[in-house]
Length: 190
Image 1 (cartoon, one colour):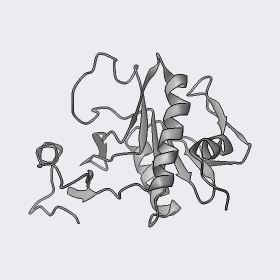
Image 2 (cartoon, helix red, strand yellow):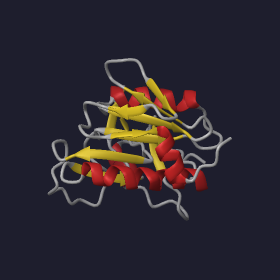
Image 3 (cartoon, rainbow, N blue to C red):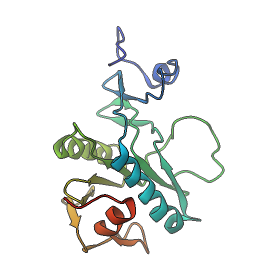
Image 4 (cartoon, helix red, strand yellow):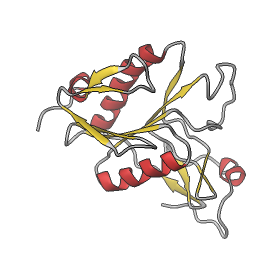
């Protein structure tokens, strides 16, 4: 259910909306408040696995947040997506930032986990939009394919599966395999 407005919502109008019923999270897309699909078990397990993996790696360099909405501009319009996880370095957002609102800067990394009913193509398009909005890296995680596809602003996407080591010069010292993540999350084979 999209919250309809007579005219496109601005960032300020979106942030002033009353909270949704229950645990509904809304994203601002094309001037409309659009509910985000609720996560299922595999999705939540993968979110937890990434938190366990990334928090120690980025300690002292930035923060990892699940489900933090971010205020971006895409194609000249306000856009407030809520990635499944984000990493924001202290270079982009100082540790002194303590506001209880959406993140005001593009994160270094946005992670989107494909939910039932979503397609890789939909999230690949969203990944390109993130990059256009100055997010430095986007990972699209597919639990069925047991893959992590990394989207770069200046290179073609690369898909990691099995025991292929995922490293990135942007995240010095970070090295893991897709299989490590899926095993940590307890995602069954097949």
